[in-house]
Length: 386
Ligand SMILES: [Zn+2]
Image (cartoon, rainbow, N blue to C red):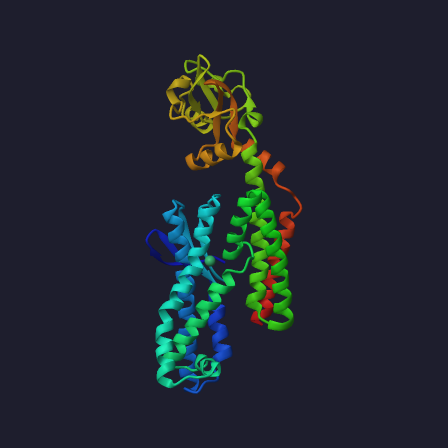
């Protein structure tokens, strides 16, 4: 199911996931029939309340997004779904301080909302002569403007409190991971945070089934387990790739091809991307597709220099696989020449990377297992709708 883009705030796309319709359905079924202001009034109140709560969720996510952007992290979009909001960042900064700031910016927005709402609620309470906590509890159920403000106050308190639980990958879990990273390093810190988060998520799932009978909490628990597992794995792979040198994984090559050689010469041993060298130095890349289309277009008589790409970026044998792969993705390159002290040594390709990635990805949870968990989440959702 694709999320729909409904607008932009700055450069950030705002998207709504189709599962949000379930909330409206839930309101229609659950709240449509009761209320002192009559069914219609109660329904309008409920829908308005839900819309405002999701507005608060959106502001929470924008808090993360703007803090991330102020630290130079690109934000792709903010998506609201049945289990809440997600701000999709390009990456989560490895620096514990930055990660903490971005994680806290979301709940900080909710706390700011509470601070903003509090004076109105206190003023109302003074005018009405509230004495007991029961008076406030009754106000929450009241379909009136004051009741709406009080309910919004509670919703923000719950959003802040819930997100600050130390359950990775929720905000509190990220702060927890950042704190652990300072003590034991990012790799071990993430492993511990994911483990703690998954134990708490299982406890949440059990509690939601037995006591709360709340499917949203159950879905959130399943989401935490799946996303936590995925992020934990991504960090393990990143740590492994930062340790590996690209020289270890390059295809060693006997000197590449010279600019003066005929184009057909590049096809020896099958079509592939070839590095063009002059006196041992890299001077260009000959992309396989360009060679094939030049030959198909009848320009076989051309020399390598005629169609080579001179805008070439090289990697050093001692560069980490992580940095080289990141650069290849940014520049949209399939292959990078690897040099040692400026001399051409070999080529590192996307194929080599894919091979290496499969080796460093621990296979404790196969894609089959993840697919199984997703199916489970989907059937739970179906159960709920029924
Ligand atoms: Zn958050």
